[in-house]
Length: 300
Image (tube, rainbow, N blue to C red; front, side, top):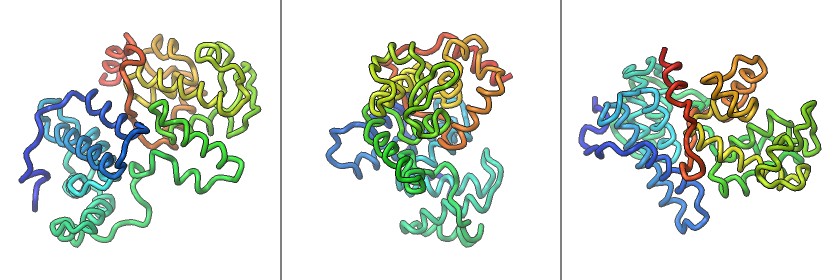
């Protein structure tokens, strides 16, 4: 059996922030001339970072984070990441052993010509019909294809605008679904308005003059998401909680507030988005001063 990356040199540890910025630039820059090449570069960066967390190479060993990064690289077509993630699941390396999930990733690599992946596939069995959740498209194409015609118009606008703000369209779609169910004229009891349910203070903060105009509302919501992603360093659960209850409330409680509405909201976003982290731009704002306490509380 081949251990992951046995014949491949690993990069020296890269700051996680640098990789996140590389991912954000690769996925969102409108100036890319070769999307396929950009995806390949992004996949390599993700796979290399995943290997660092898998092996504890210059960073604290974190198999769960390694698996998430490997999966994103696998989705972008990186054969080595596909094999490595299959190997982790097949051998229970830091993850619960799961032959079905292992089979899916070995099958992906085998279809690209990896003979060792094909051999491992024979050992773990046939892949399941449904792909692992982490492989769902960050652009939300699967959501778009299943939506009603009126919703598709809004989703198409989200897919057009979200990259301009460095936000995955799927995250914005999840927020819109939870906030207004794609109703441009929605108004809440607290006077939150439009598709992304902007309260008047948020509209003013992000220069939204017409909150019921779909494009203006989406732009305002994306600007707020971009800010929250930087403030909470890409932590999707904290970003969702802050979008629902406010960033000051998340800071005050040192994590997701104990409100049933907010906790339910966070789970709804996570269920649709299917990722725990998101690239962010630290130039937008500094991180929350409460992040160290939030992290420490999670480790208790």
